[in-house]
Amino acid sequence: MSRLLIIAAIAVSYYVFAILLNSVGTVILQSINSFDVSKPEASTLEGFKDLSIALVSFLVASFIPRIGYKVSMLFGLILVATLCAITPSIGSFWVIKLLFAGIGTAFALVKVSVYAIIGQLSSNTKTHSSLMNTIEGIFMLGVLSGYWVFAAFIDPTNEASLSWLNVYYLIAALVAITILLVLMAPIQKPEVNKEVGVGTAFIDMLKLAYKPLALIFIISVFLYVLIEQGIGSWLPTFNREVLGLPTQVSIQITSIFAVALAVGRLLAGVVLARVSWYPFMNACLVGMAAVMLLSLPLAEKVDENLIASWVDAPIAAYLIPLIGLMMAPIYPVINSVMLSALPKVQHAPMTGLIVVFSALGGTTGSIITGYVFEAMGGQQAFYLSLIPIGALLVTLFFFKRATSSIVLKDTA
Image (cartoon, rainbow, N blue to C red; front, side, top):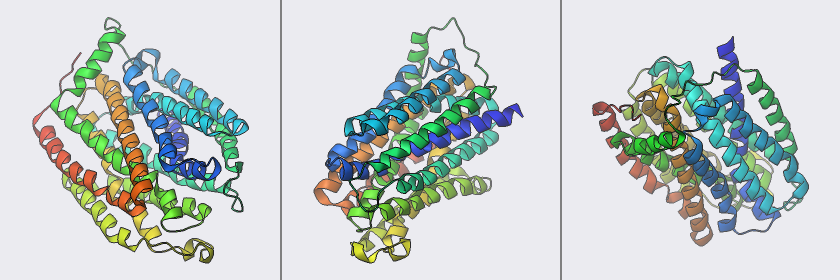
């Protein structure tokens, strides 16, 4: 029962942050509409979110085990609840930046804690991978519901209206419920070698990054998140400006991307029980490239007045989000392979590195896509994803070879 309560606490925490983190695409579109900001300026929201994640993870990942995962999660959740509660009353682009900086800070604390807790609850690679995919699948369900929740608060008659900000009152209430659940969960404080100082633990995390296997791994993580956020953060704007869909439909139909990611991660657990992870990852990457090459030529703007619902949307609006089906398994699988190769004492620092380079990849992908979108158009911006897809094929080859021949040793 206690195990189920812990899993429920980390799953609900991940669900809430899925709504917040992946709302950035919707908020970028609404910031352009409501605050009249440019695409490059709107793309900085990804930076406020991801760079906060990177900085906080880098600085405190090695310290979190000392204060305990439960305390870390509670601090992050309380911070987010407070910011969500005050955002609608201020209603300015600067407070949206502050909100995403707070979301990034809180998520860094929560993600490092959640990944380490998964390690506590797992006895072998199989159970670790299974629980990791389940938690990441729940994360994607949160992403899916987030599109519909935000769309419900948008005024279809006035795109510049600030009524959409009221969604944060609802989210603040959800976070408050999550806080109560985490308080009840019997999350164990990890055993920490008190003779090793915080500075030493921080240096050990840096040393971990220089291991050949770890270095190849974090490059792979960086490339993957660059692709996912470059597409995911700009898909609502792509639907609005390239395909000509109404704002509400643009956001709602983006939920297909979240559905594809969720389904892909849940199906991956079944497929990976029968095949090796490496050929499966290669097939996924080839499939991603195929989706972009087949669907982007079909992306043509239609008359907005002719679109009353999803049924009227062009076929490209349905095809492009399906890249998520092939993209979905890559992140949790390579994370699981990496963490399973490490002793549990190194899970927190390695998770810190995962979060740091995931954040840097997300910011890079969103900002590059934003600038190319502004300068050359949405189709060219999305075609750009083929470059990191090809690079990821290369890095996964070396990652597979490294995992076959190298075993990381405790750096402590």
